[in-house]
Image (tube, rainbow, N blue to C red; front, side):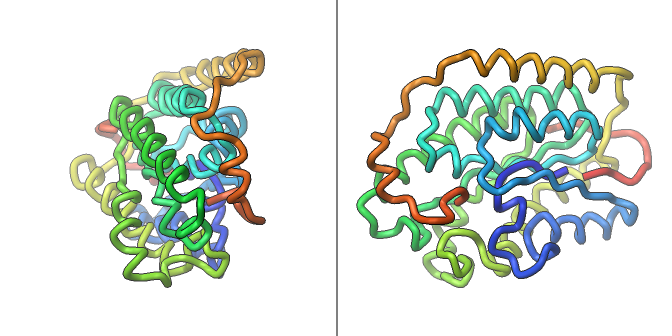
Length: 261
């Protein structure tokens, strides 16, 4: 099961199987030939969208492996840190309580190494937000028992030396970029498989349904809550927007079924 934004949806890839989710499925099938994939990623999604639209579907499908890639749109749309933290905690908490899935979360790549922001006036402000949002993401993910993949550090080190990792739009990954993304994600997944050959634990009947109802109730409540103030003046990020900016656990298992991703 893949949750997230346009990078999950494959923006910038030359074909549906060339983004990182498709490549992960290929690798997973070498271990579990019957593994199935459900990709719920949507271009332009924020953490709030994952919580309200993608998570209910995920809980209902009872996955064994979940990848989560979300945050760039929260940054460019000037969402507040506290709102992002609230949504991430709710997503990871629901997955942890309502499924037996191994959850793998990637940190937000450094957006300022891409041509869209590099050398622009807003570069320092965007970088500050990337660092702050990643701190929240890493802290919440580790607290929930999820595996954390450091795309931030990798992007800072590798993209300046390998500009071909960024696609033609100057923001999303290219096929080569998605291949590298998949390598880093797979290392985390493979480590889990090595420790626990099956990607599942025993389930408690009805738990996913109860969590699904709870998520829906929380979604209704959040609609009534005012958002907190953003960290960066709105005009600063708006000035840097261009078309296309819409984007860019330790659970041991039992059983021998083919996992659902």
